Length: 286
Image 1: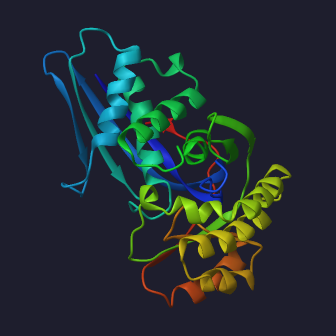
Image 2: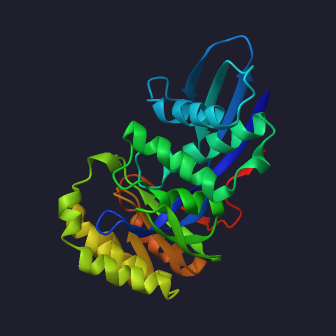
């Protein structure tokens, strides 16, 4: 039995570290999962393509949870393999995408994708992420955007989607060479900007996502110790730009000609700069 799925990465509108309310939007870059189930091999084995030493606890735990809830009792073992266009620990929700793709691929292998709602699929991946310690917030905002597509606003304490909207933006991403792990973020410093986070939430719930992004970016660059100059460079051309997640990537949204001008600024920095678009389909089988 084999299942395959792809889950999009996402960029940040509102970082949930300050108030546990978050917002994110799916982008057209993917993490792919293939899950093979067996009746005669015990255990769950995970592999991350191109990263032989990567921690596979998240994807293995996701498979375990899906099997516990939905498997035929004759299924004894599984192998899960992921590969990604999204760099790990870059603020682009690679863990959420990996969990989402693995949930759906496992259900696909069981021929049970219709047995669980998409929001519940995202919740299962978030539960696994919390249990293995790869998230400081629960990341339901990131998981819901990746699973449902479009932009979502969420309450991460209750794992509830407060709003979802479909947006059609061009997106510019700059990913520097450094890596930043969400679980290592200084939550206390982020809580100091809670008043700004509540303002960002109000803007997002009012549908003013791009302005919300920029306020978020300025607040969380200060809280997390990132240089805000990439934001200032982009604000000459676009309304929406933010630090994505806990960094180090930055994302800007707007018209393609304006983003191409921003790209000229960001290309002068070390790392990778790339153009993509928003994605509204969310996680899907292959």
